[in-house]
Image (tube, rainbow, N blue to C red; front, top):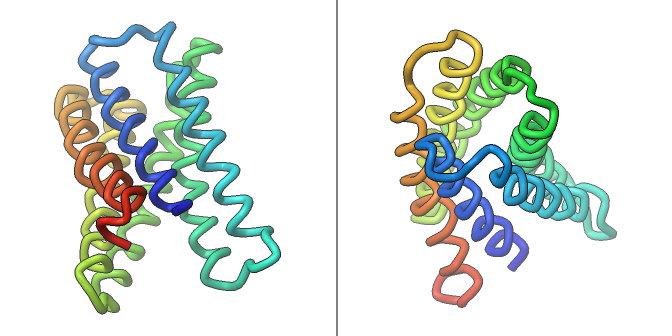
Length: 171
């Protein structure tokens, strides 16, 4: 259920960040969802890493979840500080590079459709984080592409699977 909870709100933040990049949400508002989902996913990751039932698998999941948490918290902080986002852009490159072997490993070891979905999600997230690097550090004009990709990934890798997990349809 914890995964469903986090994915549901990751979907929301990706969709809303996409709308923000399309200038349909203001800078003065977007920090709210980023801070909320950053803290929510941080708490879930801490539970996975430091809970009484923590093991190697849950600690690995926490480490990967924290990539999301820090991204959202950093974006929220940038909206407050007025930072230009280059630091977040470089972190996004780190995440994109990290996500590639995670996607490959997940796909190579997939044992069911859920594993395949997760591997493909990691591949999609790698592309999105790479676009953030291109946008924030190299100043490439990829904002609209990143925005629409964030919205699509928000639905397909977050909101919909999170909802299906929460309602017991999958899981």
